Image (cartoon, rainbow, N blue to C red):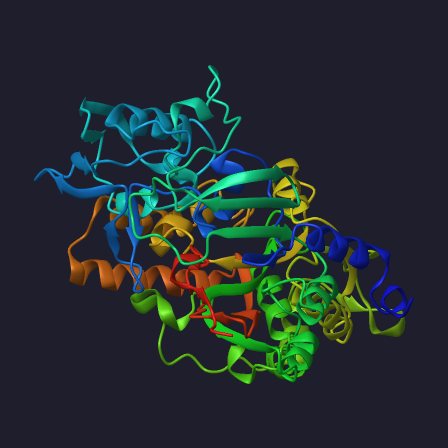
Length: 508
């Protein structure tokens, strides 16, 4: 009864769900993210992180492209023809052999669905022979290798697809093959005996999606999970005192930001967005809520992104006086209890966010309080993460709080093309576009020489910093609680892999 009172029925049921599959020798992993389906376009990140499916191109610790299922590649002088040589003796989990024809089929299906491959100017995908795959472009596309490393570009077996291109089964080439598949919450996987690479020491894994941070903390404390990702600050501090656990925290190229509908009457002027930014106490959020004083974001793109990051910017400080002056220029006046009105209408906005990342509701509540000091009536709507892209698409979104990773495509340009191009993006700009930024992104897309490209990245970062199509708040730390029965755990800063193949059980 004590567990039920402390954590609630849902938490306990999830603990039971995981316990029913927990067995000796099984690596139990808990994370916030549900398994959205079988298609890589929906849930590819789960299958890549768990070592179930793979891509033609992989990335190293510096996000540089390295061979994946393709052992090598060459590009023509005009940058329009890319020739990939596939590895020999790669077998899918159903026993079928990887050929260029199979890879072409998988990439063609991925190209026809939402994702980074829709950004690639593909003229054709052709299997020249069993081992050679050729991609032909209509124009140069510099982040092609990064796009092919994205989880939506996974290579699945022919039997994974229906005649209409839908993915009905996850049949990959990774070191683990799915044994039990129960989306959206759970899957188990076992070692793929015909894996082409080095065999992992751990032969069985189980994954559970648990959206509530307190549930994940319970599973770590109870020993029902060996690895628990994404901890709220309070749980992180508590679990760090548990001798059976080690707690890991690594900065990653992800930014907690506010997405704004720039067509909204209260947000369509850059001065309004600047005022809302000035009213945020980032230092208070970083220190008091996240317990990471260095997490204050002075711009959108984090320091680890090289030339995309602007050096020398001042640490942003809260300035209610300046914020109020900017809103006054736009006609907002203080009414009863200090709240702002214009033409008889209150400055009232609705902010959507979700609890899968446990710090987001905390930050949203802090913003509600901080903006009230400016006279803004902020209403919170805490629901599912899917409500943010849905609100972008139907135009109902006003504000959203989210955490955006700029390295899920292992080249920030790929994400920026998705988020800040002419049409904006589900997780980026909404009803905002900048002609000069579009020119820059297109020039980088075509492939500028290194010196020119570095200058263009700086200019793009400056435009995003000044126009504020989104408002950055803090940098992000990925966290995990790990059983001390496990060795060689590490966090991938690009969130591409859980690095299961490098882990082993500690000696008793």
